[in-house]
Length: 265
Image: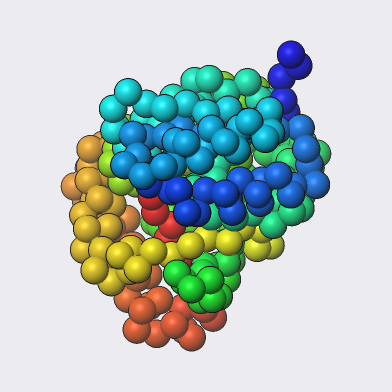
């Protein structure tokens, strides 16, 4: 069997209700040479059975079930290990792509030789209503990305032929951020397409009640994963905090300054 051009990675945990819509958005892509790897992380609902049914209806969909719950990083890494595509793309089990997403993004990557790319995205609430659209910088260096995670996980694609297979650090949170930083330690820039090609669902419990935890995970990433000195950690963490204050207290000023929402997993 010929290898697909792109392998799409989706970790699944208790995603029985949202998964069919996510998969449908992949099936509606104008670019069709893909495989979709669904990894069930020992869900307690019927996610695994739902994934199996979807795979019976489309042989481009592969299903893996982990032997025990290990978190999104382990699920994604297991899928990356089994991926056959030249490009590795990510979409979470409650997000959706616009139909032209892969065609638009892969076309730019092939033409320009980008190792890692990402796009703007639209944030939706639990009722499916648009909250806002998050724009992205044209390109990002390692140092720029340390200031905040501009890259939405469900928007990202990397070139495994150019970079090799790169795995996520096995963290419970911020594992996607850790992956982008790992890639940018070995290449100069990641490149953005400032066009919203993904709908990202903002869960209610990921808003204000989680801000302190998110800040703590960011600090741990700087110190333990990136091994930054205390002074450098304080410097980059201050950017993270100031940007958060601008977004929450002065949204119009933040928009005028191009201060984007940090993305997290």
